[in-house]
Image 1 (cartoon, helix red, strand yellow):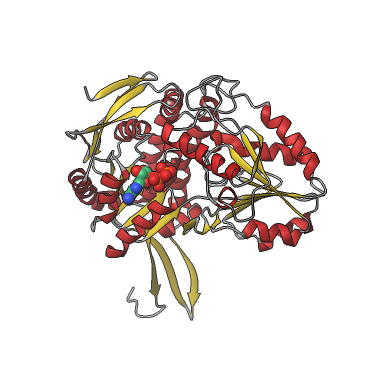
Image 2 (cartoon, rainbow, N blue to C red; image 1 turned 60 degrees about the vertical axis):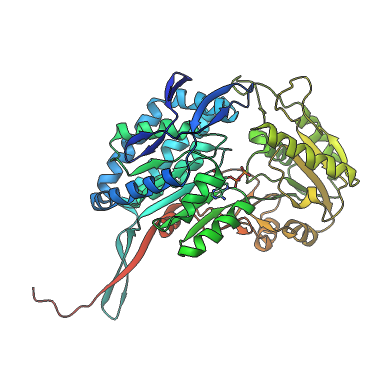
Length: 487
Ligand code: ADP
């Protein structure tokens, strides 16, 4: 009753608390976006389960801390091995649960899950814990001490990848973890907990409480026993979490939404510009980093738009398990209707639909056609709010200064893409763009050592490389004098 077999894996639908599977009296349904099939009934946790999980994580903390970075590295590498062993099944499970392309889960996302674990496990051993400078003969020795229990709250668009982007550094830093996965995609985290157990992660070091944001999530972030909160999700939820965190002064790391610009200058390689622009539909537009505002120089706007429309309309939409599919379904009916609402309000407000504009009637279900909006009023919703679907809006500019002004005219500052034919011109452009990550003539090139996060309302803090440890650990400076030693 508490287990389902999916994609060749046995998935337990209960919480994981202190190394035990724990049921709740109530459950919620996990539904596949591919065909609406009910996949599982998952334990619906609340404050009781959260309290137990935080207690278990606190109890497990001293031993995990004392194991040291080398000991933790060994276990995390074993866990990564197990992810790789079950990669095919995990990829299938994730596709069933969140509807993203199977081929990208296979080739990109799940290998990255393993990488998230290996990278931070190695980084903790190789890049931290060394004296960094001297002051009048005194050694300053910086250490990154484990800080306690990390509460991790994760979204549904790349469930296990974004969860391990936090789990990897948190565990490597010596923290113990309570994870609350998104309620629309609870399954991969649950199976991952079994792998953690098999890899030898001690009981209580990694806990999973399933449930809704307003219940399990809210209880977790309000808990006084947690040392860190790392959250990826929407701005309104971040505000609610920040309010809870304020009561305990719990440090937070927020990775939030975006309305990123993709700027195409008039000397840009047009083929490359079109290709990169079409990539913004990846994962059916459910990517916080997407460059959803296409800002195109007026001299090339017509040519760009014609080529873009042609290419975007060729995208193959359908079952995400099929190799040829390029765009799968949206995550949930509620979300599809939200996306539709954005497009309807944009057109009611005078904007024009260039391509797409609504659900794909041939396919039915949750498939929304790749959409391009033009002629939207400056400052209107479609140019300012995050849609989180396959909906891009095009605007034109006359000078690079205009482009920067348009690009920065948003409350977000997560990412930007610049397509430009001249390096100096690109450098001038990027200098004044406000964004955590800027890609020039490329998109989605990610290095785990690089800082990642958002400016303005796109986030608080940076993760990646040492930045992750700066967040999950207590950074300590110990100053050793050159005198006073007896040996
Ligand atoms: P989205 O709108 O993309 O679903 P959310 O920010 O609502 O994004 O959700 C991201 C994660 O935050 C999910 O795991 C969700 O359950 C959780 N969440 C939602 N509301 C709260 C809350 N009040 N406190 C803590 N977590 C929450």
